[in-house]
Image (tube, rainbow, N blue to C red; front, side, top):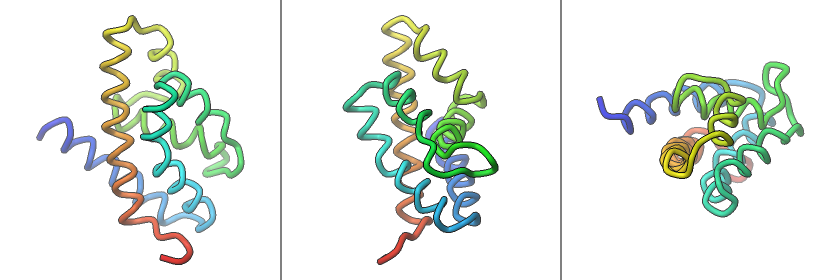
Length: 124
């Protein structure tokens, strides 16, 4: 199984799990899934992670939504916490940072694809 296939499988599991939860938090989770790839591309990985980790408008399992989403991204990508992913982004030299950014972007795109397919919002 390729890295992309593994990331896709894990991201799909995470998105499906969010879809089974409370509808309002699933809708906000879907919004983060949809916006994160563009955020990473526009702001850069470190800034995007910092922004996402400050999002506190909803909770999932007593965890702020942004932190929960970053944890999901980090778990799918490397099996680590979101805080560890953020530390790695801040400490990396440029070549490693660019590679990490590319990989996080690839995982975020899988989240977006599955959110579009699985997390229905009002009006869809």
